Image (cartoon, rainbow, N blue to C red):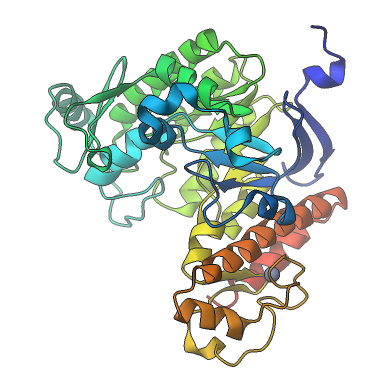
Length: 419
Ligand SMILES: [Zn+2]
């Protein structure tokens, strides 16, 4: 099939900011979905954005959702071959992405052993493990001697999981080939290469060896991918080590992926995370889209956009909503607090989300949460998802109008004021 010039290029830059690396773009996927970027990807781990129905996704202007390959694969088990595809199952026509399972290599593995997330916060850890300590760790993993909380064993050829959540008695294997085949079956528009996500507590050498595995697996994923209807993104690794990030971005960035994601440990602080973006971006082709994996606090969105990130994904809008965390342009508040009991105002003044236009008030939502009514979580989710999508629209507009840096400063001042 011959493609026109526009169709060939799945990502089009509409406007570049003059003072920063921020850009507005259009991402088109082969099944026909179209997304304006910068955009926020809502998380629907098991083929569902929790509490929301298919029509809610349209009402909240949700343009992209990411589902989780590992949990769908494990949850579906023998039923995977009969899986009808994410678009059918979710009854959703927007863009759907799936991750590769590489994040679970970390979250079920060293994330547990080290008790950390992708961005650690250890002011004390100025020193990282040295060569011999990393070598010892690598040998320990290969011999299968890990902490009891760690359910993953990464080998040069793939990863073995023994996940008590799925009642595993034996190890279950996932590698680049299996990840691609599962993602083909799941049928998302955007799929990710299999990688090893490292921990902020891993030393330089371990991070380097893991990065080299990721590069090898990335090449394999490109060779293995069979479905032209799916876009394949490569993942940049390298922890928070400058030379490794640069090397990984250069190597992954030179491979013929359809887009790129920044993954892995993002260091010990937000500043580390922003540096990781600055080190990586120069090596990623400008005309391909860039995704920052698993990050989505408001400040991080602005700082990411400023450094050239097009899409983000995070559970913040949805997970916090289910616990009563409500996002507004004046920051976040907890609607379950007694102070909301008598506030007969919308969750956010002037909000046109499906919940607020329906007459929802803070007092009413407080009541629903107090009575443990599930409708509370659903209404809060509608509001938060709409809010994040609207905020991204405002960011795009500010870039179009050449006032992104001013908008960023104004918004961060407002949103972070109450904290
Ligand atoms: Zn609202």
